Amino acid sequence: MKATNDLSRLCVHTQTTKPWDLNACITAYHQAGIQHISIWRHLLENQNLKEVKSELEKHHLQVTSLVRGGFFASVSKSKRQEAIEENKKAIEEAAALGAPLIVLVCGADPEQGLETSREQIKEGIQAILPYAQSANVRLAIEPLHPMYAGDKSAIVSLGQANDLAESINDPFVGIAIDVYHLWWDQDLKQEIDRCGKHNNIFAFHVCDWRTPTLDLLTDRGLMGEGCIPVKQIRQWVEAAGFQGPIEVEIFSERLWKQNQTEFLEKIKHAYIHYT
Amino acid sequence: MKATNDLSRLCVHTQTTKPWDLNACITAYHQAGIQHISIWRHLLENQNLKEVKSELEKHHLQVTSLVRGGFFASVSKSKRQEAIEENKKAIEEAAALGAPLIVLVCGADPEQGLETSREQIKEGIQAILPYAQSANVRLAIEPLHPMYAGDKSAIVSLGQANDLAESINDPFVGIAIDVYHLWWDQDLKQEIDRCGKHNNIFAFHVCDWRTPTLDLLTDRGLMGEGCIPVKQIRQWVEAAGFQGPIEVEIFSERLWKQNQTEFLEKIKHAYIHYT
Image (cartoon, rainbow over all chains, first blue to last red; front, side, top):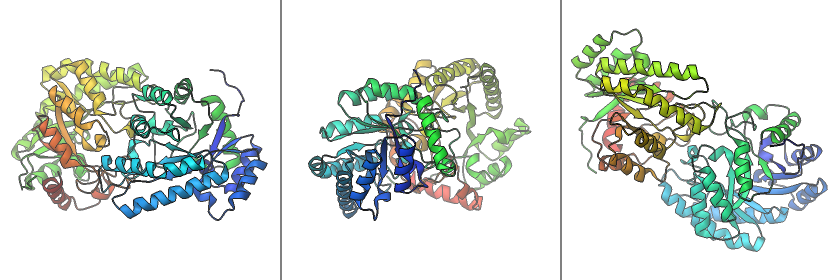
């Protein structure tokens, strides 16, 4: 595999540079030659979305995805309904920004079994699907690592995400493949192939798994800092038909402490050499 | 399911009451009416194993397992050889104590792929198998949670452990099923059935998964404190033919800070009501 300096498919998640507000992300990503951004929703609070859209356009940044919807599972029916309302709001925001995709962290509730949570996730996606279709915003189920099965996602493998997406069987519902969550799975290549065959690879997220990992949430590594075969997985995903942006999504107390402009240069380097 | 006060199958791992040394564990478990103990090897350093065995007998404690062997995977051939030597030593210790079983934490090396680590694990087990057979000590492969795939175990599902045990196909090689590592797996029941059909369920470990889990290593819960369907999984394991001791293996900074005698009473309560 040849390393080039081509950054045309590099996308950065705003949460990767968490110390920055949205304007700082937009300005800095543009200055660094990055053309794609995935926006975390909390940064949109109290913002005029038309102005945000205009800033994005001014800086030649395309929105890859809005992060994140989901959290459909709960023992409480009213909470499940609240989640559906919140997802409709996310769809409106995505449409307003011209974001083609919302990433769904599907949710789990420790007070009930994973099977029940999975049923509620399916019901939730089906409930918001008409809104997504009419807004022309696609929905990407993101299977999370099994260490989040307790409270964040009852979908913990690409196989389960494939099952769910195929059971809904709609061009607006697909999958976000994140190497951090899925690298350990012996069936990964086969499930990526399956995902591609059903045209369900909607997004591809990269980072790395550090050893030791010191925190369940905020100790991800830059590509090349860990043991995930990122290049191999990218090759599988592309062989299965995906040619969209490669999204760098890193949560790291360690990296957030660094100068974020310099960190962005490290991201570019890691994207070019280890992705 | 009827709750009884029958403790005859309760086993406690010495690491569960980490603040205690081996003598304290032996005395306290006996006083609490516990009849089974799993011993962590570091507690045997500088001990006379004959005396330990005599103390165990005096306190009517049967050793369920010696914990732990394994760590077979490494890019370094000399480290792999060292691991084999260390495992032979563990087998000798187990035989000296009358422990019928060694739990294997199989290992992984972040410098190489999981496939390679799994091949080395198989080679390691095959290398020590003749020693285990002649010492009459069985070997239990313990699949770990995928969050340990980076450096502790390339075997991260019961399906993989079943594959490995069946490929070695020897009555001295089986599996330790730990609810903490495996509860999230959609295929768990089916793989437990398969494990039972091959007479490969050698051990059963219980604890619970807390939400949120604050640490990757030492934030396990007492049965009933988390979201694992412990009773359900125990029922599957027993339906698949397992009738051995139920081993309580909890690593918890929170619980280690408590009075360990009182903690042992809580373990008994959790065993009776939530296991």
